[in-house]
Length: 343
Ligand code: TLP
Image 1 (tube, rainbow, N blue to C red):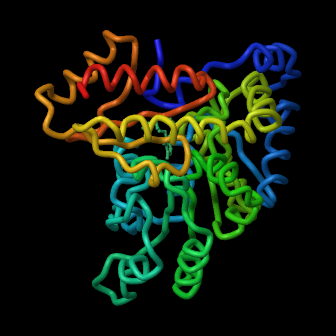
Image 2 (image 1 turned 180 degrees about the vertical axis):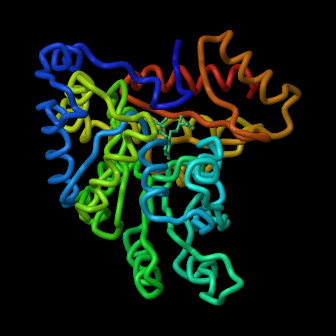
C-alpha cells in the first residue's frame, strides 16, 4: 500500500524504536522525566526560546496557546482554511470561549494589510482582538511557506496594536528544511509557537509549545494538566522526538522532491488540475475536474489499486509525501492515478 493520506501515518523507524526502548524515564508531572526535559531544552535552544513544553498533539499546542493569550469573548484572527478553523473541532470556541475571525488567504497565506484590516477598533461596542495565529507551512494552502518578510510585516502590525502572535508550526520543519533559514528566524516573531514531531519528522506522537515568557510557561503547564495532556513516563515518546530532531530534519528535502515529482506527473493527466510550481514542500493539492467518478469513488478506486489519497472537499484531493515513501513509490503513485483517471 502506498499511503499518501498524510505525513501523520509515518511509523517509527527501527533506530527510533531503539532510542525509545533505551529512554531513561520518570514522572513528568513531577518534572522528573530526564528525556522529556532534554527534549524540551533541545527544542527551546533550537528555536531561541526560553522554554518548551512537550504536549501530546499539535491540536493541544494550538489550543493551549489560544487559551493562554486570550480572554473569553475575544476574537482570534486566523486564515479561513487554517487547521485551527477546520480540524480542531471548534476547540477555540468550546475551550477558550473565543470566536475566530477568518481572513481569506492566498494558498493559505494572509498579508499584513489583511491583518491590519481585521483588527477590531478599541471602542466599547466592538469585540476585541486577542490573538493573531499564522500557520507555516500551510496545510490546506498546499504546504505553502510563509515568506519571512510577510511574517515580519504582520508582526509589526501586531506590535503596533499590542496583540500577541501564535504560530501553528506543525510543519515548520518543512519550511526550515526547504529554506535552510535558522529555526529562530521564524520563531522570533511569535509569542508562542507549536511544532509537531509526529508529521514529517516521523515520531509516533508529540508536539512542543515554545515561548519566552516564563510566567506564561507556568500557566501553560497548568492548562496542559487541565486539558488532560500532562503525561507520566512520556520520555518514551520524547526519545522518539529527540531522535527525530537529530536525524530527520534534513531528509525532509527528499519528501519535497517527491511531492514535486508527483505533481509533475499528475499535471499530465487531462482531468487533473495542479500547478507543480505551487508545490513548495511535501503537500500536493490537486483537483479532478470533469471525471465521471465522484471524489469518494475516486478515493475508493485508488484504494483498490493500493494507493491511499485523501479527498479534502469538493473536487480537491491531497497527497502528502513522507519518510515511508520512496522515489519508486512516488512514480508508481502517479501511474496509478493516471491509469484510473485515464489519459
Ligand atoms: N493535520 C492533520 C489532520 O488533522 C488534518 C493532517 O493530516 O495534516 N496544525 C496543522 C497545520 C496540522 O496539519 C495538524 C494535523 C495539526 C495542527 C494537528 O496536529 P495533531 O494531529 O497532532 O493534533
